[in-house]
Every structure is written in C-alpha cells, then in structure tokens.
Amino acid sequence: MAGPAPADTPVDLVALADEHAAKAAADPHGRSAHLLVHDGVLRQTVIALTAGTSLDEHNAPPAASIQVLRGRVSLTVSGRRIELRAGQLRPIPQERHGLLAHQDSVVLLTAVTY
Image (cartoon, rainbow, N blue to C red; front, side, top):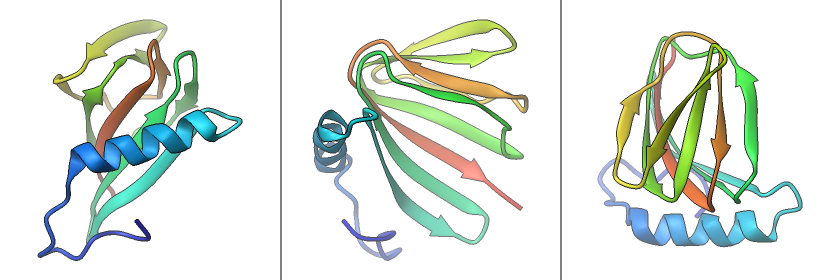
C-alpha cells in the first residue's frame, strides 16, 4: 500500500498486518511501518517489529493509544514495562516511552498531533 487510504475505503487490518510482518522479517532492522490514516490531527500507523526489536524512547504526542494486532510487546515508560498482547488496547502516557517486541508483533498506533 502506498500512502494513507482514502477516508471512504475500508482497510483490511489483517492483510496489512500480514504485509508488514513480512516486510519487518525481511528488513535488516526488523521493522516496517505504514501510515494508514492521516486526517487533520489524527494519525494511525501500523508498525511491525520482529521479536527482540525495539523502538527507542521518544516523546509522546498529546494523545495516543496502542492496540496490539498480533504478538506480545512491552510499552516502556519511566523505567517500567507494561506488557500487552494481541487484542489489547492501552492509552500511551504523555511521557517518554519506547516499545519492545517480545514476539514478532504488529501494533496499531493511534495518535493526535497538533
């Protein structure tokens, strides 16, 4: 898929997760991401990580959540790990955070930016 889908087009998250899991597996850094929705301040991104891959700590947007589509990850916040598995959704605290994949994983990041 190239670029965000038009607003009136349904997105097959299972197919998108499959596609980006395969891309992450083939990537030397073990990652793949796709901006799915870009509508004003709303952003939704599918992120695939292979087991053991992490996203370094970074600043949080004004509002965000993470939904695990497959696998098992930890959201790292202030030195603690918050473990999430497939089917779980959690708001992301408004502080520096990172993400660690314990298994090959795909997440849906929803963020509001200003």
